[in-house]
Figure 1 (spheres, one colour):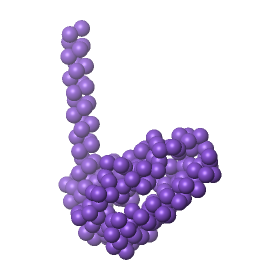
Figure 2: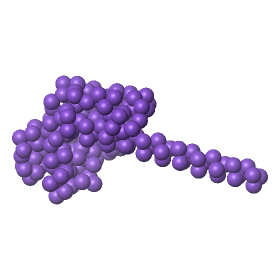
Figure 3: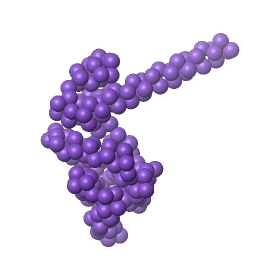
Figure 4: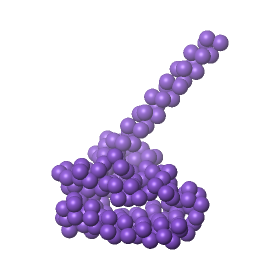
Length: 204
């Protein structure tokens, strides 16, 4: 019994270490890709460039990210999960409470300096790439199904995804215009807040 318990503990320890190493490798590849995309633009960077900069093989990159676009949108699964968990009644703070969609951890007070510039460059990179703008819509459209399950309404989910896309476009446009953080916040409250008000009235 003691031997079996020891083996089980060792196995779990090895499994946990392996998973942590995989997570660290994935994060490292994503971080390298982010720096390259910001420096050169999405279209100019190849998977081979990313693999070389991350000191891994192209196969390893594809093991973690099936397509190059997945490297750019690495955080979108977490955004989706946050919205699904909050749907339908508690999504407003995740769209309006701070600059980062799906998160209330970063507030508008935090939105300055390096964070502002980093998000502006990221938005500019996406805006300059037809492949990324198209992929963004594919990703958000895929959220309709889980949001339908969470809210109990496919119609609500489809309309809400439309508001998410409106929020993304409004935020990115303001950033590309170099608007001040307070101006961006006001614009989101007016445009996106108004859309959310209409959604609430429609499904009251």
